[in-house]
Image 1 (cartoon, helix red, strand yellow):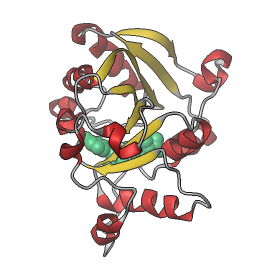
Image 2 (cartoon, protein in one colour):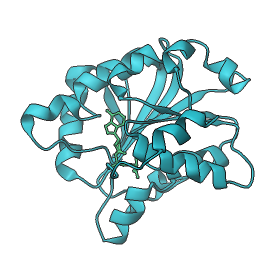
Image 3 (cartoon, protein in one colour):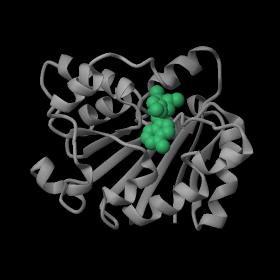
Image 4 (cartoon, protein in one colour):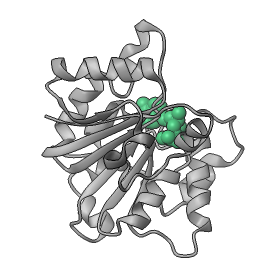
Length: 214
Ligand code: SAM
Protein backbone atom coordinates (compact mmCIF):
# COMPACT_ATOMS: atom_id res chain seq x y z
CA UNK A 1 0.00 0.00 0.00
CA UNK A 2 1.45 3.35 -0.95
CA UNK A 3 -0.89 6.29 -0.98
CA UNK A 4 -0.03 9.36 -3.02
CA UNK A 5 2.08 11.82 -1.10
CA UNK A 6 -0.15 13.87 1.10
CA UNK A 7 0.99 17.44 1.72
CA UNK A 8 1.76 18.00 5.37
CA UNK A 9 1.75 14.33 6.37
CA UNK A 10 5.31 14.50 7.75
CA UNK A 11 4.38 17.56 9.80
CA UNK A 12 1.24 15.93 11.27
CA UNK A 13 3.23 12.80 12.10
CA UNK A 14 6.06 14.90 13.54
CA UNK A 15 3.69 16.52 16.00
CA UNK A 16 1.81 13.35 17.02
CA UNK A 17 2.34 12.03 20.53
CA UNK A 18 1.40 8.54 19.28
CA UNK A 19 4.46 8.39 17.00
CA UNK A 20 7.90 7.53 18.35
CA UNK A 21 10.22 9.88 16.51
CA UNK A 22 13.67 8.55 17.43
CA UNK A 23 12.88 4.86 17.85
CA UNK A 24 16.57 3.81 18.01
CA UNK A 25 16.83 5.75 21.28
CA UNK A 26 14.11 3.57 22.81
CA UNK A 27 15.92 0.26 22.30
CA UNK A 28 15.69 -1.54 25.65
CA UNK A 29 13.54 1.28 27.09
CA UNK A 30 10.08 0.44 25.80
CA UNK A 31 8.61 -0.11 29.29
CA UNK A 32 9.40 3.56 30.00
CA UNK A 33 7.44 4.70 26.94
CA UNK A 34 4.37 2.75 28.03
CA UNK A 35 4.85 3.32 31.75
CA UNK A 36 4.49 -0.40 32.52
CA UNK A 37 6.19 -3.73 31.90
CA UNK A 38 3.38 -5.34 29.91
CA UNK A 39 4.43 -7.50 26.93
CA UNK A 40 5.19 -5.71 23.67
CA UNK A 41 3.60 -7.01 20.47
CA UNK A 42 4.42 -5.44 17.11
CA UNK A 43 2.81 -5.35 13.68
CA UNK A 44 5.20 -4.82 10.80
CA UNK A 45 3.59 -3.18 7.77
CA UNK A 46 0.52 -2.08 9.71
CA UNK A 47 -0.98 0.10 6.94
CA UNK A 48 -3.71 2.38 8.29
CA UNK A 49 -3.68 0.78 11.75
CA UNK A 50 -7.11 -0.88 11.97
CA UNK A 51 -5.79 -4.27 13.18
CA UNK A 52 -3.39 -2.94 15.79
CA UNK A 53 -5.91 -0.50 17.24
CA UNK A 54 -8.62 -3.17 17.46
CA UNK A 55 -6.10 -5.55 19.07
CA UNK A 56 -5.17 -2.84 21.59
CA UNK A 57 -8.84 -2.38 22.54
CA UNK A 58 -9.33 -6.15 22.91
CA UNK A 59 -6.10 -6.63 24.93
CA UNK A 60 -5.48 -3.62 27.17
CA UNK A 61 -2.73 -5.50 29.07
CA UNK A 62 -0.56 -5.76 25.96
CA UNK A 63 1.45 -2.87 24.52
CA UNK A 64 1.32 -2.60 20.73
CA UNK A 65 3.80 -0.97 18.37
CA UNK A 66 2.74 -0.52 14.75
CA UNK A 67 5.48 -0.12 12.15
CA UNK A 68 4.83 1.42 8.75
CA UNK A 69 7.26 2.45 6.02
CA UNK A 70 5.35 5.34 4.45
CA UNK A 71 4.30 8.58 6.11
CA UNK A 72 1.30 8.95 3.76
CA UNK A 73 -0.05 5.65 5.17
CA UNK A 74 0.98 6.26 8.78
CA UNK A 75 -0.89 9.56 8.61
CA UNK A 76 -4.15 7.61 8.25
CA UNK A 77 -3.38 5.61 11.41
CA UNK A 78 -2.58 8.81 13.32
CA UNK A 79 -5.84 10.38 12.13
CA UNK A 80 -7.78 7.25 13.12
CA UNK A 81 -6.20 7.38 16.56
CA UNK A 82 -7.15 11.03 16.97
CA UNK A 83 -10.77 10.16 16.24
CA UNK A 84 -10.91 7.66 19.11
CA UNK A 85 -13.14 8.88 21.96
CA UNK A 86 -10.42 7.80 24.43
CA UNK A 87 -6.76 7.71 23.32
CA UNK A 88 -5.38 4.15 23.35
CA UNK A 89 -2.55 4.37 25.88
CA UNK A 90 -1.19 0.96 24.84
CA UNK A 91 -0.42 1.85 21.19
CA UNK A 92 2.51 3.64 19.57
CA UNK A 93 3.52 3.98 15.92
CA UNK A 94 6.88 4.12 14.19
CA UNK A 95 7.58 5.23 10.62
CA UNK A 96 10.51 3.14 9.45
CA UNK A 97 11.62 0.39 7.12
CA UNK A 98 11.57 -2.84 9.13
CA UNK A 99 14.98 -3.77 7.69
CA UNK A 100 16.54 -1.99 10.67
CA UNK A 101 14.13 -3.34 13.29
CA UNK A 102 17.06 -4.66 15.37
CA UNK A 103 18.14 -1.06 16.01
CA UNK A 104 14.80 -0.34 17.69
CA UNK A 105 14.17 -3.40 19.87
CA UNK A 106 16.66 -5.13 22.12
CA UNK A 107 17.26 -8.87 22.07
CA UNK A 108 14.05 -10.65 23.10
CA UNK A 109 12.27 -7.37 23.85
CA UNK A 110 9.22 -8.31 21.75
CA UNK A 111 6.64 -10.94 22.79
CA UNK A 112 4.84 -11.41 19.46
CA UNK A 113 5.16 -10.24 15.85
CA UNK A 114 2.29 -9.84 13.39
CA UNK A 115 2.68 -9.67 9.61
CA UNK A 116 -0.59 -9.02 7.81
CA UNK A 117 -1.01 -9.01 4.04
CA UNK A 118 2.64 -8.17 3.48
CA UNK A 119 3.65 -6.85 0.07
CA UNK A 120 4.39 -9.85 -2.22
CA UNK A 121 7.42 -8.45 -4.13
CA UNK A 122 6.70 -10.91 -6.99
CA UNK A 123 10.10 -10.71 -8.74
CA UNK A 124 12.58 -13.36 -7.55
CA UNK A 125 15.35 -10.81 -7.25
CA UNK A 126 13.24 -8.95 -4.66
CA UNK A 127 12.59 -12.03 -2.48
CA UNK A 128 14.77 -10.61 0.32
CA UNK A 129 12.37 -7.67 0.66
CA UNK A 130 9.41 -9.93 1.50
CA UNK A 131 8.63 -9.55 5.19
CA UNK A 132 8.29 -13.36 5.80
CA UNK A 133 11.62 -14.10 3.99
CA UNK A 134 14.45 -15.91 5.78
CA UNK A 135 16.41 -12.64 5.84
CA UNK A 136 13.61 -10.96 7.82
CA UNK A 137 13.08 -14.09 9.96
CA UNK A 138 16.73 -13.75 11.06
CA UNK A 139 16.00 -10.17 12.19
CA UNK A 140 12.84 -11.25 14.04
CA UNK A 141 14.85 -14.05 15.69
CA UNK A 142 16.97 -11.42 17.43
CA UNK A 143 14.20 -9.27 18.87
CA UNK A 144 11.58 -11.94 19.71
CA UNK A 145 11.47 -13.69 23.11
CA UNK A 146 12.67 -17.31 22.93
CA UNK A 147 9.13 -18.66 23.36
CA UNK A 148 7.57 -15.84 21.33
CA UNK A 149 5.46 -16.42 18.24
CA UNK A 150 5.02 -14.80 14.86
CA UNK A 151 1.67 -14.73 13.07
CA UNK A 152 1.28 -14.13 9.34
CA UNK A 153 -1.94 -13.73 7.32
CA UNK A 154 -2.29 -13.28 3.57
CA UNK A 155 -4.62 -14.14 0.70
CA UNK A 156 -1.61 -14.47 -1.63
CA UNK A 157 -1.07 -18.22 -1.96
CA UNK A 158 2.24 -17.82 -3.80
CA UNK A 159 3.61 -15.61 -1.02
CA UNK A 160 2.28 -18.01 1.63
CA UNK A 161 3.94 -21.03 0.01
CA UNK A 162 7.18 -19.06 -0.23
CA UNK A 163 6.86 -18.12 3.46
CA UNK A 164 6.34 -21.77 4.48
CA UNK A 165 9.47 -22.84 2.55
CA UNK A 166 11.57 -20.19 4.29
CA UNK A 167 10.85 -21.54 7.79
CA UNK A 168 13.05 -24.61 8.11
CA UNK A 169 16.27 -23.11 6.72
CA UNK A 170 15.77 -20.15 9.07
CA UNK A 171 15.25 -22.40 12.13
CA UNK A 172 11.48 -21.86 12.60
CA UNK A 173 8.58 -24.33 12.65
CA UNK A 174 4.83 -24.05 12.26
CA UNK A 175 2.70 -24.29 15.36
CA UNK A 176 -0.56 -23.80 13.45
CA UNK A 177 -1.32 -23.40 9.76
CA UNK A 178 -4.43 -23.03 7.62
CA UNK A 179 -5.13 -22.26 3.98
CA UNK A 180 -8.67 -21.10 4.79
CA UNK A 181 -8.69 -19.22 8.07
CA UNK A 182 -12.32 -18.12 7.95
CA UNK A 183 -13.46 -21.76 7.79
CA UNK A 184 -11.11 -22.90 10.56
CA UNK A 185 -13.08 -22.60 13.76
CA UNK A 186 -10.19 -22.96 16.20
CA UNK A 187 -7.83 -20.57 14.38
CA UNK A 188 -10.65 -18.04 13.95
CA UNK A 189 -11.10 -17.79 17.71
CA UNK A 190 -10.30 -14.19 18.68
CA UNK A 191 -9.43 -13.29 15.07
CA UNK A 192 -9.27 -9.58 14.43
CA UNK A 193 -9.62 -8.58 10.80
CA UNK A 194 -7.17 -6.28 9.06
CA UNK A 195 -8.32 -3.83 6.40
CA UNK A 196 -6.93 -6.03 3.63
CA UNK A 197 -8.50 -9.13 5.20
CA UNK A 198 -11.93 -7.46 5.17
CA UNK A 199 -11.47 -6.42 1.57
CA UNK A 200 -10.15 -9.71 0.18
CA UNK A 201 -12.34 -12.06 2.20
CA UNK A 202 -15.43 -10.11 1.08
CA UNK A 203 -14.30 -10.79 -2.51
CA UNK A 204 -14.35 -14.54 -1.70
CA UNK A 205 -10.58 -15.00 -1.36
CA UNK A 206 -9.44 -17.62 1.17
CA UNK A 207 -7.12 -16.26 3.84
CA UNK A 208 -3.99 -18.26 4.72
CA UNK A 209 -2.43 -18.00 8.17
CA UNK A 210 0.46 -19.50 10.05
CA UNK A 211 1.64 -19.19 13.63
CA UNK A 212 5.34 -20.01 13.92
CA UNK A 213 7.94 -20.43 16.65
CA UNK A 214 11.59 -21.54 16.89
N1 SAM B 1 -1.33 -4.84 7.38
C1 SAM B 1 -2.30 -4.02 6.70
C2 SAM B 1 -3.53 -4.82 6.39
O1 SAM B 1 -3.47 -6.07 6.46
O2 SAM B 1 -4.57 -4.22 6.09
C3 SAM B 1 -1.69 -3.36 5.45
C4 SAM B 1 -1.24 -4.29 4.38
S1 SAM B 1 -0.39 -3.44 3.05
C5 SAM B 1 -0.55 -4.51 1.70
C6 SAM B 1 1.31 -3.67 3.49
C7 SAM B 1 1.88 -2.50 4.27
O3 SAM B 1 3.20 -2.84 4.69
C8 SAM B 1 2.00 -1.22 3.47
O4 SAM B 1 1.38 -0.16 4.18
C9 SAM B 1 3.50 -1.01 3.31
O5 SAM B 1 3.86 0.35 3.23
C10 SAM B 1 4.03 -1.69 4.55
N2 SAM B 1 5.42 -2.18 4.41
C11 SAM B 1 5.91 -2.91 3.38
N3 SAM B 1 7.21 -3.17 3.56
C12 SAM B 1 7.56 -2.61 4.75
C13 SAM B 1 8.77 -2.54 5.47
N4 SAM B 1 9.89 -3.09 5.02
N5 SAM B 1 8.77 -1.88 6.66
C14 SAM B 1 7.62 -1.30 7.13
N6 SAM B 1 6.45 -1.34 6.48
C15 SAM B 1 6.41 -1.98 5.30
